[in-house]
Image 1 (cartoon, helix red, strand yellow):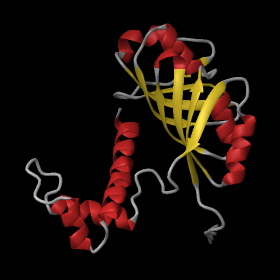
Image 2 (cartoon, helix red, strand yellow):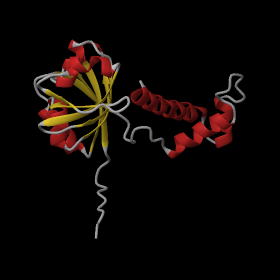
Image 3 (cartoon, helix red, strand yellow):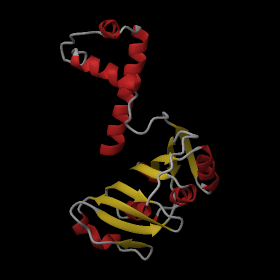
Amino acid sequence: MFFIIWLMAEDLIEIILTAEKPSCGVLKKLSTVNLNARIFQINPGIDCTNHLMGIDQYSKNMEKLRDDNITVYKNQKDKTWMETRSCEICRSSAVSGAIIISVRIFENQKVQYKILLKNKNALKKLLENVTGIKYNYYITDKHLPGELTLRQKEILYTAYSKGYFDFNRKIDLNGIAQELGVSKKSVQSTLRRGMRKIIEEYIFNNL
């Protein structure tokens, strides 16, 4: 028999952390052989971390990826599984019990991580263990990635169904406010926050 225990004391915390040149063997190797890659998923561990990658022209560049510090597992379709020693961010994520939701790679080995943590203590533990590199972070909205509030869903649906997003706009913010019986200012701010969530979710998962 299995039991599920719900802990409601604190909300989950989501952060965006940008690190400069983390000691990730996979990223360093990719930069030296000049290959474009996308990280689909990371499973962080204290010692070793698994990376599910999308690497351009993998079959042509397989030999370039051979490295004593990296284990490359069989490529399937457009995904390659690479294992290496954990960098500062992955090690800290594992120690704090965090989940790495998504990763974006920029020029000069700058990497941006979207990380989900259980509570403030987990965030504190994560930051205490990130040493030896430059980084910055900020806490995002308390809602989970892509999750809209009921008010945001209501206003976005009303705006869409009434033609606010049509090329020849059929309703303006005043009209939406009248439909819902709220102020124009409330419609404007809620619509902006809802659209920002949707755009952020698209960017992090598709670019």
